[in-house]
Amino acid sequence: MYLGIELVLALCAAPVRTLFGFEIEPQFNEPYLSTSLQDFWGRRWNLMVTRTLRLTVYNPIRHVIKSNVGSTWANYIATLATFVVSGLMHEIIYYYLTHVSPTWEVTWFFVLHGVFTSVEVAVKKIVLRRGWRLHRAISGPLTLAFLAVTGNWLFFPQLERNGVVTKAIG
Image (tube, rainbow, N blue to C red; front, side, top):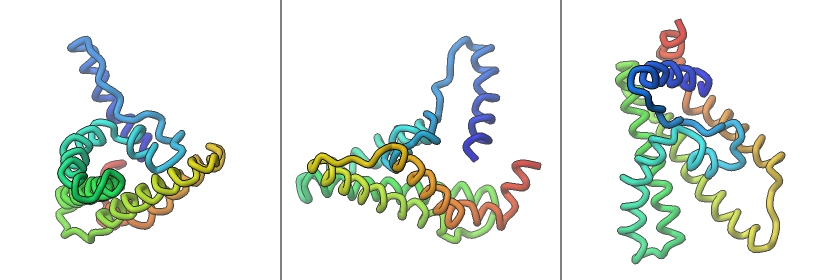
């Protein structure tokens, strides 16, 4: 999927660069080198959407609830809310692509990733205080495996069932 999106974006960027003489900001930052879910979603995947969701969902929610629940819990709640919004946005996109009512698998994919990203951040804080860190040779493949397993379980099936992948390729 990444390669397909990257190819489409490169094909769109070439005429813009030629006609207007400026570069379009890259939307991906080597996501295959991700060492954690936080790294993948926050710094490497779909960067324009990441920035937009940070500014429109994460920051406002965190700001509003921080005084009531504290900074740590505000971060976790804002993270989960951001992933829920992303899931709902994907359901809308899937609906317009397929004209089939949502199955909510995609939303569950993002809810799961929001929960696991928050757990990952909490665990990293605890183990870093103890001076321990998972080597990137282990954390990288674990991250990519989690993305592949959950993507094949919850993200892609709805598209495949409704022929979107076949239509996009063919």
